[in-house]
Structure formats: structure tokens, C-alpha cells
Length: 367
Ligand SMILES: CC1=C(CCC(=O)O)c2cc3nc(cc4[nH]c(cc5[nH]c(cc1n2)c(C)c5CCC(=O)O)c(CCC(=O)O)c4C)C(CCC(=O)O)=C3C
Ligand SMILES: [Fe+2]
Image (cartoon, rainbow, N blue to C red; front, side):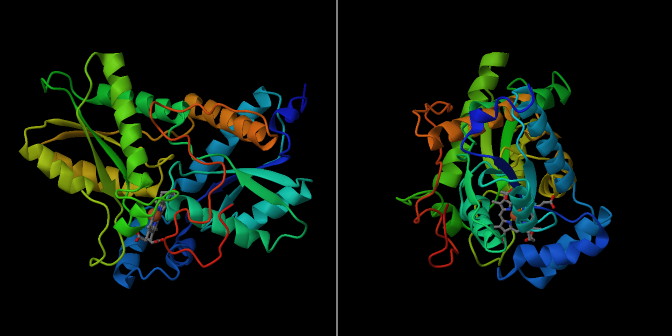
């Protein structure tokens, strides 16, 4: 039945997995960092420190291997559904770049491409900047490819359940019988300049912004699901990692290590760090959680484990395949009822021009 179900994704005839990218050798580290921070005013000392950390790992970030595993899992899930369309990886900051991916899709005969990013939330850095990157890449590709994307998927039950399962596994790694109140869940995501967070999502842009709101909705839903599975809903907080930028610019707080200190002071004994802001176990997770926050928490006397990200959990992969089909049905003008966790926003199939305006070049495309 090879290819017999491609109609499920009609009008799309090609798929694009968009990710951040990372270095895979020592020589790639500085060029990668310069691409990431071009025009962003990140101090050179910060760049040197980040380069050190990549070099301590042989200059290899796990992110590209994680993205390739995600692409393989998606291809396998779609093949199981009888869907066989070309699927390419296109990165913002390392090969294979978006322009190469789009050229590959065009050469495979694609004309209408459906894309997804490896970030589940909306903000300038996690959504709109990728759309701008796609628009730039399209100028380098002959023909007139059209690129759409699936909705932001942090509130999709597949993504959320993958995190519930990962946190459950992490709780089970903690030594039993230490605490009468159970492990405290510290949900972690990438910090952002407060101004970028507050202007995230479509207008009206009210504090704290949809970036933070969405994380809180995901966290509350995960805690409720864990409560149902285990008979007691865990206490939780949302914390931030990977702050950069100028020390004078306000970024989202609390930092994960500051929160751990506060929790230790208040008598908490066991903590699960749950990086719900990320979809793979890449360097930000390894550097900022495994190598920095976990030992810092242990030095405070806490027992700390880090939960996996969604990675290629079957619930996540099935959810993404469903989201491709949902977006295609919507593009065909059919009525769709987006699956979404309680009280969450389903996210957008395309963004209005006023969405996530932070740092946007005037007139830059949103879709
Ligand atoms: C929201 C968000 C995500 C999640 C959404 C998504 O996944 O896209 C994300 C992911 C990632 N960020 C990553 C790496 C870096 N981010 C930096 C800098 C920054 N990130 C920002 C935001 C985000 N970043 C921001 C506002 C800056 C300041 C500069 C700017 O305004 O652009 C810097 C510069 C040095 C530093 O300051 O740390 C690096 C090296 C990697 C790769 C890890 C690997 O190699 O495995 C990944 C997946
Ligand atoms: Fe980042």
C-alpha cells in the first residue's frame, strides 16, 4: 500500500522539520555561535564561556542526532499510516540549512510544504524567528514553493502525555521513602527577555504573555495527570534556564538554581527537573540541567533527577502525525476540531502580522 494514503496530507506534497541546529565538531563551534548570536549583542565573554562548554564535549551537540531521530520516527509513523512523502530537516544555525532542505524538497517534486519546528511554544525566538528564516531561505530556492506549518503543539495531548510519562519515570528513579509530601516538580524552560515573553503570541500582548501562560497550562495539566495516576497531585513551580544577554536586561525568572535554593530552604527534599520547554535532550538541557542545576541542587542537600524531554516518545510522534493530518484537513477547508488539553489554546495554523513582534524586521513575513 506504499504511498496509497498520501491524500491524508493533501494538498501537501513535502514535509519540513525545522530545528535550531548545533555543532558536530570543534571547528563548527564558533561559526555556529556567531550565527546564533548575529546582531544580538551577546557579550564576547558569554560566547567564549559557551564555546568552552561545547568544546568540553568534543564540540558535538546532541541536538542534530536528536533531530535526525525525530525525523526517522516521524517517517516511520507516517509510513505506517501509508503516507510516503519526502521529509527533510532544515536548521537555523547548522547544516543541513533551511535553504538546502527546501531545495531538496523542490527537487523531489514538492510544491506545497507542511513544516513543524522543534519548539512547541510561541515567542519570537521559538516561532516567528523560524518563519523569518524560512522566508529568507525561500528567496534562495528556485520555483515557488509554499511553506505552511502545523499549529503550536505544546497543548496537544500527545506532547503533554509524553512529558507525563517521562516525569513518572524520573519520579521512580528517586530513592523511596524520603519525603512525606512527595517529589516537587520543577518545570523548566528557556528564559527569554521579559519584553520578548510579554510580546509573545497574537495581540493583545498582556503580561506575562502567552509563552509563560502556555507553560503554566502545560505544567498544571501534567501535575493533574500525575495526580490521577499516582493518587496525589505533586506540588510544582516553573523555572527558567539558559539566560544570556546583557545583565541589565530583565529576563524571565526564577532561574532554576535560585528556585532549588528556595525549595531546599523551605524543606523540600526531592525534586524532579522537567524540561517541558524543550522537545529533545540537547545541550541546553545537558549544560544547564544535568551539569549545572542537578549538582547545585545536590550540594544543597536535595535529591534531584532530570526527566527526559518528549524526544521520540510514541505519544508525541503519533500526536505530530495527527497534527500534520489536522493541518492538511484545515488547508482543504474541512472542519477540524483541534485536540487540546483542558483550557489550553489550540495555537495557530498561521500567525497574524502582529504576532511575536519582538526584534522583527519591519514587514517580515509571519507565515
Ligand atoms: C526560546 C528559545 C529556545 C527554545 C525554542 C527552540 O528550540 O528554538 C532556544 C533553544 C536553543 N538555544 C540553543 C543554543 C543557544 N541559544 C542562545 C541564545 C538565545 N536563545 C534564546 C531563546 C531560545 N533558545 C534567546 C532569546 C537567546 C539570546 C540571543 C537571541 O536573542 O537569539 C545561544 C547563544 C549563547 C548564549 O547566550 O547562551 C546558544 C548557543 C539551542 C542549541 C542547543 C544545542 O546545541 O544542543 C537550542 C535548542
Ligand atoms: Fe537558545
